[in-house]
Image (tube, rainbow, N blue to C red):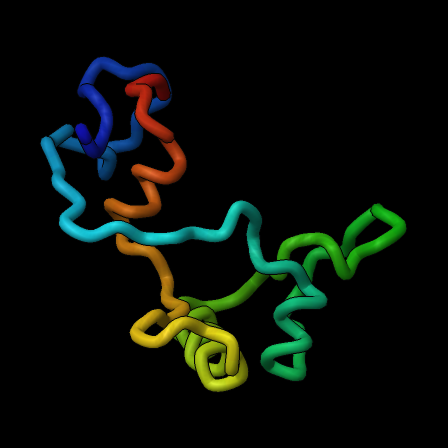
Length: 110
């Protein structure tokens, strides 16, 4: 797929190019939703969330204010706790290419 955006795309940031052809060499799974506050607490025992939520059930909202290192730590703890995980599988953060491919879902629209 083409990763990045064309130079003339409206709203394009400087770090989004140049657009280039990228090949993902292995299949991957990615969560359909963000990690919720309740999921984060269940795995790590704490919440880093700093943004107040105006909804009735804030436990279902995404965890926020997590550093990259904390997100990696979450994945590590999740791997340790998930006894049902298939052999050879691991929870991890997606690569930049995997994340963009998942977000775009094929089209080249902004």
